Image (cartoon, rainbow, N blue to C red; front, side, top):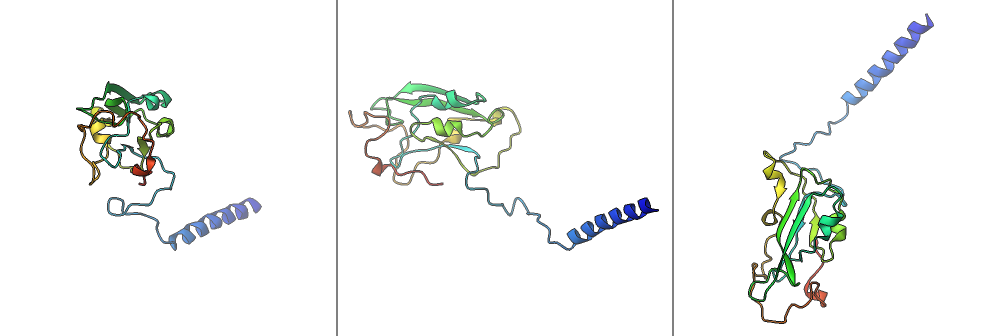
Length: 177
């Protein structure tokens, strides 16, 4: 008889939990119309940043590719010239690809970059229909040219850019998402 009472008590506890949850407001978010805020340190889609003058920050050093534990980043560098300048340094990334089927969003690429060119944003809407769509090229990763900047490649006077990281960082503010 005590086993029956014990079982009835357990069923009563379960029903009480069910009835209690029926009175609570649902936490459903109507996703496409409403988006939940993400955590401040959330690591989502990658973005290749630019300086305020429109030059790309990426200097093609491939440190991000070396730091990537999933081997998801491919960088091919080329030489900058004053007639065709893409970045302030000697080189620039002519090919920059991230394979999102391999990427684990660890943020090591962001930490390894000496020019803070690659950042992980709070964008989480990534979907692909084919495997090729999952490989983001430089054109898809590069942020738009700032209003006061010029698109790359730029023609610059000789000797203006001799360092890959500018000495006077007041002209190049820290990126804010």
